[in-house]
Image (tube, rainbow, N blue to C red; front, side, top):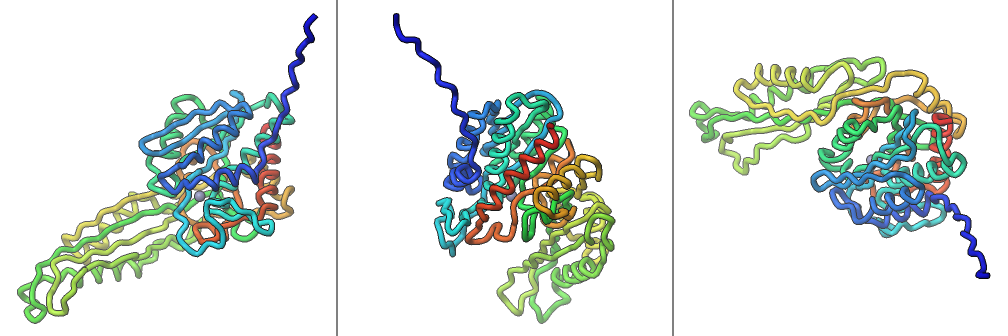
Length: 385
Ligand SMILES: [Zn+2]
């Protein structure tokens, strides 16, 4: 009688947050490149039983992975692209080197580290809850640091069409300024870019009556814009701020009145304004001081805020329990993909310490990486039971 062949019990290997973070960092995924980063993540999630949907839009790789189909549906959102490394690194920015308990690499905290920490958290949770009550998903884009046109915003459209909108979303942006547990982001200011162009009539500086100098009305308009106070801040936001970021005349001569002058400016605005209200305000002020000037406006994000409520309170309570710190609920900083998600679901941002993001020698303490993974796991356990 032939010997019975016994099936070996499947050995379950948990996702290791450090190994996965290193695997992701070793892909040089400077926006819009991917360099295999999403394959690394997709393979790890598929091995856990996630249904992985690759969702490329235009040149942008994206993925949505979900395990379970029930509710509540908890989603983690993040990105695998990174900003260029620049110079001045102690270690290869795409080497994933650990030196003295610190993991170095572009994306270590913004935000491959957090992506790996969440995947590991899900893996640890699923090991204890093989058929979870609700479902866990990851919304990952390869274009957060770039124009963000074919990334999260497009994936959300797909998710809405497929009935995959979550009940709560955590974005893994590095929300903590100095230490883990210090801060969650519960909203972001809006951002608006504008170019003001004034046309005049070129001429000799000695005969100004025969010319029309566009620089003078441009200066007057900018003076009016920069001396205006947009607001005094709101209950949850700091005051809005207008910054002139460039004044461009490009005139090499002292004795020529130029034909054109332009300026660029950026407004970071709170929930007392919208992109549309500020565009109207800009055109009005500019029109008064520089009649005929053109104002081109591009709104890259509206201000948004996560309503206070039980979901937010519970996430903050878990962070406090795990770290011993009561996280500050803050709305400062630049925009993030949370601005798109907030149109569909309550969204909270919590990730690693952001002290070295977008700098040479971006790094994360391995202990922080493991601690963040444990916090994410505790948040999922608290939310799904
Ligand atoms: Zn980021």
